[in-house]
Amino acid sequence: MNKNRILRDTCFLTAVEFAIQGLSLLVNVFITRKLGSSVIGMVSLIGTFFFFATIISSGNIYLSSSRFISEEIGKKTGNPVKVFRYGIISSVSLSIFTAAVIFIFSGIISTKILKTEQLVIPIRILAVILPFGSVSACIKGYFNAVRNVTLPAAAGTLEFLVKSGLFAFFAEFFITQGKLNVLTAFAVSIAAGQIFGCLFLAMFYLKCRKPCRNECSIGFKWFVLASVPIFLNSIVTSVLSSANDALVPLTLKQYGNSTAEALSQFGIFEAIVIPALFFPSSILCSLSSILVPELSRERCADNNDKNACLINKVLRQTFSFSIFVAVIFLCFGREIGYLMSGDYFAGKIIAILSPAVPFIYLEIILEGILKGMGKHSFSSVNYLVEYTIRISVLLICVPIFGFYGIVISYLTSNIICNTTRLIMIIK
Figure 1 (cartoon, rainbow, N blue to C red):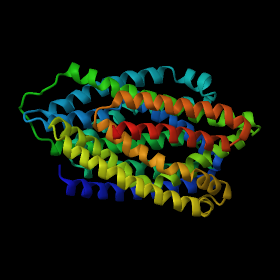
Figure 2 (figure 1 turned 90 degrees about the horizontal axis):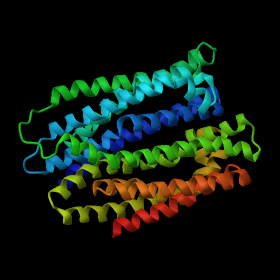
Figure 3 (figure 1 turned 30 degrees about the vertical axis):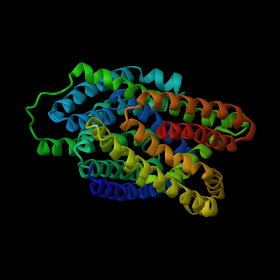
Figure 4 (figure 1 turned 120 degrees about the vertical axis):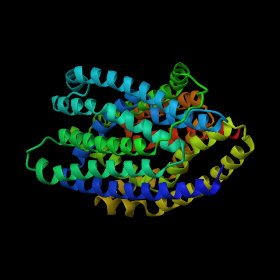
């Protein structure tokens, strides 16, 4: 295990992530002020749907390919190229099937489930690009496994710039003038970003790939079966996360808010509060993605002592960093929220949620460690419990306390379930 390389890759990914997160916050502020926070709420909901469809269609192939290719590299004789091929075949097949189902039933999904006819065309656009997302995720997993973090980061940056730049362009010149529906504009922006990112990665994979004639230690059937726990983990997380997001506007309406007020508060929460809270965690997201292949590789090489040393060091530094950030949000959260949205409401929520920051940040690292150790079943069960608690508290507290019920649900679920993760890692 090359600790200097881990540090270097983490620093590089953190710099890229900080840049993307910073630009994302600026775009959110621009869109919020240009189109209104209720529009951001609608866009956030379709973004949640697309994230859910992406997970379903790809089977979270990024994590599967990253982990199993890393394990194949950790063996004395292995064929990581063949494992990558398994990932492409399985994920693209699943994504084509999922895309066809979503495209055919887009009318039912839009009118019966999401309750708006405006989503028929956006859903069809998003369905068509699902195979591109699967190919991109698999190639990113391959590069992550072979310790080339530059190309996935560059592809992610390109995808973000195309998506955000195009949507901002639509907002400025088409949406406000009534020439283009906001949801269709958002779907087209996502599609353009996905296609550009996929073509970029495919071009560099074909250029950088190295042939390997070794015997592969696993077969296609083993790869698919071993990917099932990872897939189920992703399904549990995305389904419950989507359900939680969809319930927020509904429960706010039960409290007495109008539809516009409910979408407005949800939009502020998704576009301002959550990005602000997660902005400093970019370094942890980068480190977590690196930990999965590193721990998988060393685990297959039976270097358990090295893994234990790395995990202990990472947990101590994560806890110290998260406490520092929590104090900053507690002391200056109101000012940060006002600076970003021009409203003290966002700042008030940031300050109130600051005690949950250490647990939220620990989750990022703990999940990376659990996946690197192959504990996907525990992760799935824990996520199930976490979102069950969050949704239950949401349904009970939001109709009584309004938006502050959302804060209670986040605090309760994060504190309980991340404490459980930490106990599991310590064991």
